[in-house]
Length: 314
Image 1 (cartoon, rainbow, N blue to C red):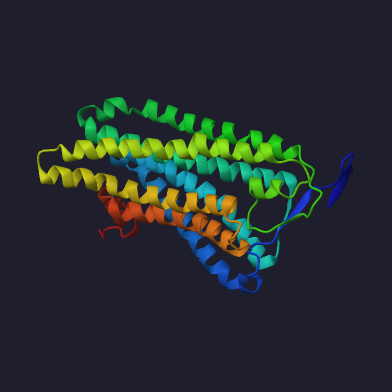
Image 2: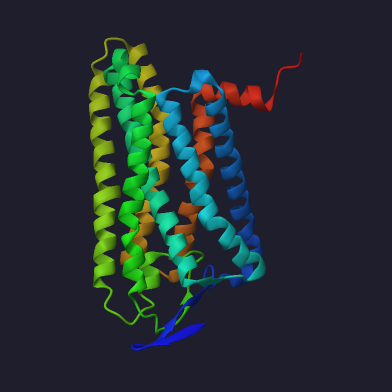
C-alpha cells in the first residue's frame, strides 16, 4: 500500500471509510442512496430520451435541459456506486489514480452543470426579451458550440489538479473520512505545503461558480425588468411561469452546493460527520429532483412523459 521515495513513505492506495461515526447504520443509509441513484438515472435518461426523440422538443431550452440531465447522470454515477460499495461491502479501497479520476470527473461535472445553468438563464433572457429572434440567435450550431465550450472550460480548469496532487507525498494516514475523494481532503493527507492547492481551489471556485452565479443573477434582473414592463398580467404570468422550473433547479444546485463547500473549508467547529452528511445530501438531491421539477412544471415535457409512461390504448 505504500512506496518509498527520497522524501519518505508515500501512500499510493487509500481507503474511503464512508460517513465517520455512522458505520453501524450503513445498511439503512444505503437505502436513500439507492433510491436517489435509481430515480436520478431513470428520470434523467427518460428526459434525454423524450427530448431527443420528439422533434417538437428539440428547441434550445430543451436541448440545454438534455445537457443538464446528462451531467446529472455522470455526477451521480461518479459518486453513488462507490458509496454503495462502501455501505454494502466495506469496499472503500481506491488507488491514487482512481482517486484523481474521481476528483476530475466530479469537479468537472459540477462546473459543467453550473455552466449549463448559466446558459439556460441566457436562454430565458433571449426568449423573454427577444422572442422574435429567439430561434435565429440560438441555432443548433451555436448550441453545439456552447456545449463544447462548457466541456472545455470544465476540464481545462480541473486537469491542473492532477499535477498539484501528484507532486505531493502522502506520508500521513491513507484513511479518507468520506464517501468520495475530494481535492482538498486528499491534499490534507500529505506532508507538503498545500497552500498552492488551497489557492487553486479558491481560484476555480471564483472563476467558475461565483462568476456563474453573478451572471445568472444579472440575467434574471434583466428578465424581471423585461417582465414587469409587459402590458398585460397574463403575459407577465406566462413569462414568469417559463422561468419557474429553471429557478427551482438553480436553487437546488447552488444553495446546498455552496453551503457544502463553505462547510468543508471553514467548518472547523462543525463535526466531520455533519460535513460528510451535508456533502452527500448535495450529491443526492439535485440529480434526483431536477427531472421531477421539469417533469411537473414544464407542460410539454409533462405531456410527453404521460404519453410514454401511459400510452393510449388503440
